[in-house]
Length: 401
Image (cartoon, rainbow, N blue to C red; front, side, top):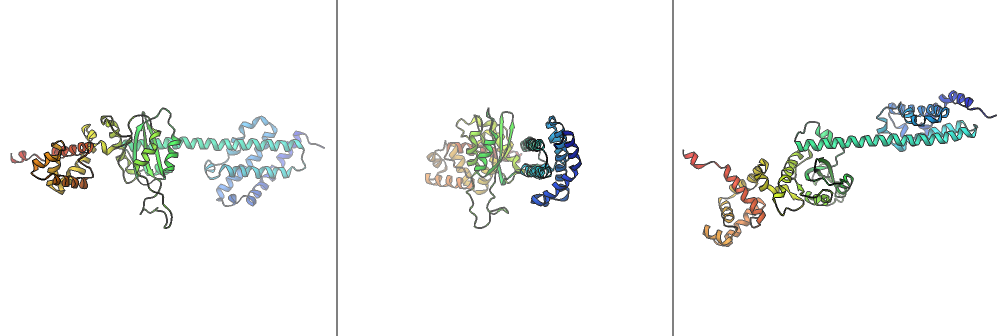
């Protein structure tokens, strides 16, 4: 004789404890990950299974309570359970619960079987929704944290919490980093930028500062000689320069200038590269034929004219001081060469030397400082450095007074 719905509900409430006990036992027997869990988490998973059975009884009594399934089943579980139990494991848990209930009612009527199948579908969808919402919340949290980290780097307000925030973002960079600054495109595709970076064995932090798009770039492949270097015998991929990475990322930026800051040792030092990149971005329009991307150090003259103290000190320390320490002859030859409009013959006449001597000295200048005075753009950089360096020298007339 078939039971009425009221009789079936009364019977289900009577055997709910038995079903919960059988479910916990089956979980331990069939799911290895459940047995490997710490006691506290195992207990939380058991609570979810028990809540699922109770929720089924409530739902069977009134199927219109579908919208409450997620809160009924997962409300008893601690929030960290979502981080320790995957969606796949949750679905395995649902399958075990359904199997136990089905076996217990093997002699029940067809309507109850259909109810179990329908409920299992609803609970599966509810589980997917819970995990989707958690993933969305995590994504929003990550985006806010990433924006905070990039803002800290740009404002040079790094504190003791910056390394932990960077670690929370899952930063995969090793060693040196560089900052790339450009304009924000009308349709910013953050995912495409990240995919491009991954293909280049790089990692990026992305920040939007109004009309500026800022990328903090690091290499995900450990540098040779580092503690994380690949084991002996492993085939290491070629390490790309930051300029090569910037060139590949260039299509993700809007129109206008794109400036790459100098390389710094680590992510916590990225504010120095960011400062240079931002200063270069502000004056890049002053170089009519500036490439895209352009190194911030290639904009040192414009940055110095705009009052950037970092550019001024860089020019003096990388050009003027090394030449001054190396040889007065090299300094004098460079001054004379630039003052004579980069004329070898004019320089040779003024110095009373052969033009080949001038060529040799200019080659030595290039070896010392890394810039070639015979190029128009580099000549501007060197002349700016000489002017700034000489301005910092003490006035000999003031000493005599």
